[in-house]
Image 1 (spheres, rainbow, N blue to C red):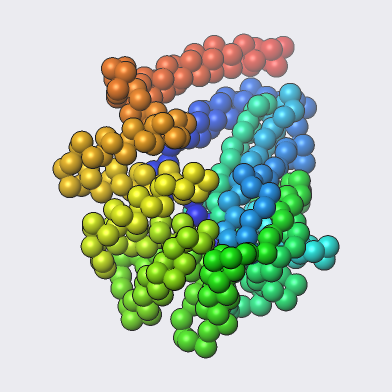
Image 2 (cartoon, rainbow, N blue to C red; image 1 turned 90 degrees about the vertical axis):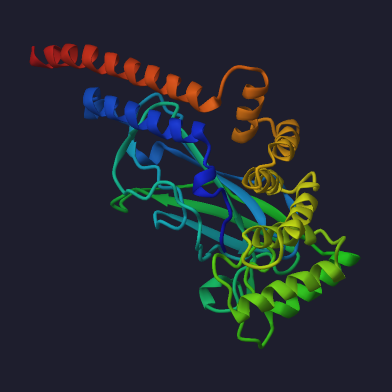
Length: 361
């Protein structure tokens, strides 16, 4: 299992601000809250959600993990909900069987410092990633004798988050996904993917649909790229194709293989799918491509599309602000952050002395 999500450089400025703001407020509460006023780690809420309740067999599944403090009290805990760090574990059950731990790797992490924080009332943090059908190697990557999402049926998923010392934990809701039987060209594409998974070649085809070759090229990676071109030639209309349009377009955009114009065509195709969870990323890649070429007109064309289809996207918000003449987004964020720091500082330096006087009596 793995996860996609956002490249570190594309992380929302607002998300960065929210993390900083929650840290500032946590420091404030840790200075003024007494142990009697603190809630327990087990009182936090952990939630799993997905935009789809049905997917095709072997199709990647986008999920969101969210941590909340819905109590009226601050709670000592942590925000390390990234599965790759080790405090959060994902469990999967197929067709009524018992839950089994499913190995998670390569989930991007924005918070890797394991330290206790005070999560104030109303705290919320979430992150998203995708689960895919696993690897050919390693028994831990199979669930009940098969790969995740390999065959049709009901798949139940839940997560468990432990506190830093492992003495307490919280469990999420159970997310149920109906894995469907592919039909038509999707069935033929499914057969192709199954054949890759059972291939005797010394090549790991895990996450074939969304894997990219990275910054280096090897004979094995060249073969995977050829397989992807073959897949698009054979199954251009299959639902699985949108993932390959995206991943192959990203490979060609890097310039290590292929050509830039081919990358643009592939990414445009990936972005054209209305229900593709990586469509915003495909549009962002197109914006970056034309910015790098010095073609701001084409870059703004894709920004406008991004803003129309995904108005909550951080890059779309910045574009809309500039279009309205409200000034560049980063400056506004910086101003808000300064005001936030001033407000928190005023609160701390005004309240702490009064609290000290209270307890001194």
